[in-house]
Amino acid sequence: MSAAAPSVRPELAARLELAVAAARAAGDLTLRYFQRDDLNVEIKSDDSPVTVADREAEQLLRKQIAAAFPTDGILGEEFAEQPGTSGYRWILDPIDGTKSFIHGVPLYGTLIGVEFEGRSVVGVIHIPGLNETVYAAVGGGAWYVRGTSAPRRAQVSMKPLSGGLFLTSEVKNFHTIGRADAYEKIQQAARLARTWGDAYGYLLLAIGRAEVMVDPMMHVWDCAALQPVIEEAGGTFTDWQGTATIHSGNAVATNGVAFDEVLAITRK
Image (cartoon, rainbow, N blue to C red; front, side, top):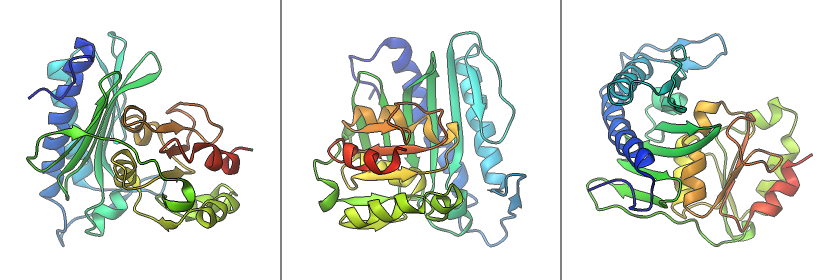
């Protein structure tokens, strides 16, 4: 079964097909190292953790992409950027939520985005430990698969923030950028707040289990897969100022209903 709806342009459909298959393959690779007592954790120069699973998963993704689309560019978290000539650039985060991964928590994900002319047009969020996937290409809607079930449309909820779930990846990051006030205000306005964050939080939003996800510190490889998925599911994905971009270093994702209320808090 094709991963893409018939309305998706053929060049996007082909890349989405590979992205879904590659995310699952890379996710399976990470599971070989998941919850192993002998897993070695290194600390990178930016104080973030990395493991052999991160590196091997990204190498697998790069190999599959290069074989199928040799003129596409590739940007990943763990290795140097590979320039391309086609106008398409794959943006990879082999393990989004490495902190969860190294602590044996199954809420980490594999993220694959494809950017064209500065905008992300294909996205896959795969959660290996739960075998849940949500994916999208511009114009084709967002789709959710759990295990071996048939894909179903992913759709955001219609709940207001006052009746909804607010998620973030790490509360400390609001303090790091001097915006603890934003976290407190959104938490107070929401029915419930949790830190089921990283890739998993955005999957929850895309399938209607959460209403708002806000992260004050993001890299482009954290964001690239998210924008098409959230937007094609009927939601909004912007920076803290309300611009629909993957390049600002922060993110506000909502079901649309809560967008104005959240943006009034984050925007300065």
